[in-house]
Amino acid sequence: MATKAYGAYAADKPLEPIDIERRAPGDHDVQIDILYCGVCHSDLHQVKAEWDGTLYPCVPGHEIVGRVSAVGGHVSKFAVGDVVGVGCMVDSCQHCASCDEGLEQYCENGFVGTYNGPTPDAPGHTLGGYSQRIVVSDKFVLKVGHGEQDLAAVAPLLCAGITTWSPLRHWQVGPGKKVGIVGIGGLGHMGVKLAHALGAHVVAFTTSESKRADALALGADDVVVSRDAEAMAAHAGSFDFILNTVAASHNLDAFTALLKRDGTLTLVGVPEHAHPSPNVAALIFKRRSIAGSLIGGIAETQEMLDFCAEHGIVADIEMIRAEEINTAYERMLKSDVKYRFVIDIASMG
Image (cartoon, rainbow, N blue to C red; front, side, top):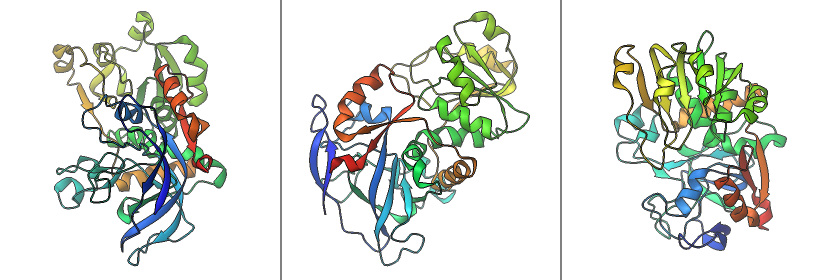
């Protein structure tokens, strides 16, 4: 099927309208007419080949919400007309220990990304959600329970939402826990919303005093400007868990010092340069941990979507037309967005 999309042909080229081909649905496939696609910072990194291995043409987009337009003969979970989502993965080996446990994001043979992943379909790698339609295995399609009016703002949940939900759930964030969220951006604003809805006492950390009011409105119980040494010291040794969403290299010791004994600092942002080595003594003498977390499995992503639908949680977004994507990328580099761009795919005509 001929499909309109936006993609790039080289790292130094802008995104532009291109025509791509989508396969006809197989027995276990779901064909989705895309309504909205969120714009993730990783899209920009991949398009610009700032991460290794970009394949061109590159059609980004892994925060997809759309409507089912066809299903394969063996598909029973979805029907034409259903509103569904697709996140960062469209396949995995399905037989390793991680896949068997519903943790496809840690597939020991490598999951297939929604774009830039290997596929037998032309052009030999997956093409993402900056397009009018996509065909995906039913195992990697998710049900969306939000109302029609919220669907654009649901799209970023497929990456930003699950990237923060998975560690919050794994480290059992909930009532009685004091939780920090470092960074109030595309990931961090979702971390605040979800930790608050899970019942934790939430402290937002930001480098900018100007974000205090926003963080409180998102659900934070307190806001700390991390450049204020006195304000940071006031929270020393008091956190059960801190989720660090910042993707820039910085000193982690400032945050590990805030953990209780057995507390954990979990990183979900990949910096352009390595973080400075942490103070190992600060970890050893309080049995503190520094950990990492990657998106979430399909079952966990469905759990997150259901929780968000039940609690009325969506991302804070700015809608753009497809032809505005290059300007959106320029603004992302300046952190000029609150907090996620979403493409209205209908604007592709």
